[in-house]
Amino acid sequence: MFYGEYQHSIDRKGRLILPAKFRDTCKDCGVERFFLTRGLDKCIFMFSEDEWRNQEHKFRTMSFTKKETRSFNRMFFAGAVDVMPDKQGRFIVPPYLKEYAEIKKDTVVIGVSNRIEIWSRKGWGEFYNASSESFEQIAENILDI
Image (cartoon, rainbow, N blue to C red; front, side, top):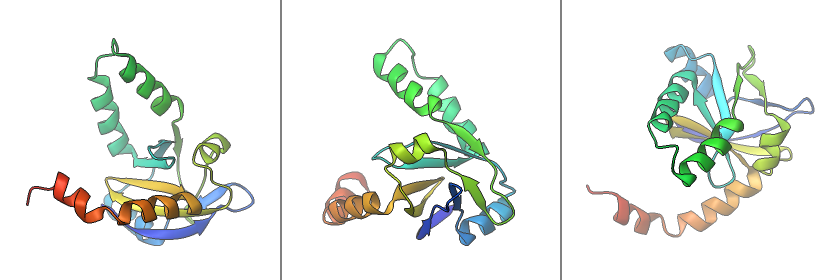
């Protein structure tokens, strides 16, 4: 559903603009509301409301008696906030999520199929450089085509 890599900046009011391609996808699919939360690798995860409900259901089925499950759920759900982009596609990224992802102003917004990730430009650059070198090896290890 969401694909591509886009560079944007957070404005002085703390707003980030959803890339035009993503806004078009949302319009076509009737998506108006999103959930932001702490992601992995120091990024922010952004889920459509439907996908958020799917993820929430998966986490509800995990045993809360396991310490790792409790810890993950606390970080994931305590960091969550719902947002509705305005007519220009802008939405506020809460300060605690910007701090978590080490975002000052410049961001990279990427589509990862069922979710959007928001990265600091520096963080994405570091991740990309480290991962691009091993991309083929990773593909060989995880893909069975």
